[in-house]
Amino acid sequence: FDTSEDVKDRFRIGKGEYDVAIHPTVSSDGKKILSVLFYDVSRYLAIEKELVRRNRELMVINTLSGAFISSYDIDKVIGNLLEKILIITDFSIGWIMLADDDRLVLKGHRGVSQEFLGNLNEGDLDDFIWSVLDTPEPLYILEQSQIRNVPFLKKEGFAFLGAIPLKVSDSVTGILFLASGSERSFDFDLASLMDLVGNQISLIVEKIRLFEETRRLAITDDLTGLHNVRFFYRSLESEIARARRYNDTFSLVIFDIDDFKVVNDTYGHQAGDDILKKVAEIILNSSRKSDIVARYGGEEFVIILPRTSKTEALLHADRIRQQVEGYDFDTNNQIKVNITISGGISAFPEDGESAKDLLHAADMALYCAKGAGKKQVVFYTGKNK
Image (cartoon, rainbow, N blue to C red; front, side, top):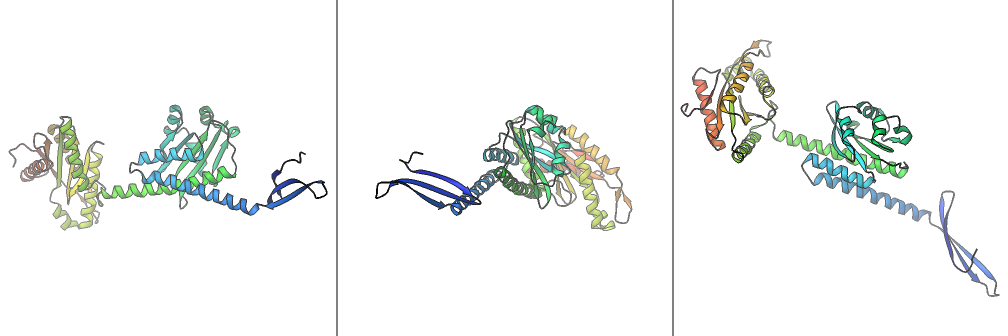
């Protein structure tokens, strides 16, 4: 070879790696000679590789953790997470499904067609997805030859699909799918990167669940599971603002269990608590999704009924009253008890334009119902003070 210039190269012998430098020179007697120097660079390469690995891990951790910290809107968090995952892993397609009771629910997606989303939401891929979760491996990889056997994946044009079960303490919390329309080489580096991403997403999903549970508990009555009075007041102010903005109306209902002290004194507080929980369940199940149902305190319950007149509210509230009255409540002594409730109704804006005025009007109507013999619902007229 041309010996007029230095030649440098790197080669491997066994488990070691070496840099070699070949240097042309001339001896004292005028002969052309080559000096060959070997450098063992194995240790330095191992250190460099470890630094690259650690830097990648830190980059993944910092990038994904930042997605959770940046927002309290859970849907935005999932979307933000998925975008960052695709950037980190260099995939163009992905979706996240999280466990909800005994099913998996799609929470975020990027790069898939509307038809494929329909397949996911309608459960057409459930058998395939659950088969992924049944595998003991931390990663489930399908390459192009295997994808041909799964019609939905083939039709979507996938050439590579990786599925990462999300687990916390051996409990499945969801699954992350990463896909590509072109073939990818599944090697150790990609496997370790996907495993790292899966571990971090699992931890973040657990944080999200804890956050949601904390938020739920902050607005929930411990005994009945209904919204608590704090949430009710906030919702009432929001509904007043909405109705005022759109020149709309809404109604407010306050229920009170008749002679509840007698129930407690006769059957005990445990039976009283059971009755409260069942009354709450009846009211909630009889209400619309748009209604706000809350425990107001003690044996009182409230409902905010958006876009509902007093007349409509009276019909709705009286149906609830009849359902409660017709239910046989169990006590600790296996004795069936029938109870009754009374109710008062006020409406925005005719009975008041503030939370204080509306609550006062509904209270006065409830007081009137109690005074007229209980087990009835009346609405505020301005005369029942």
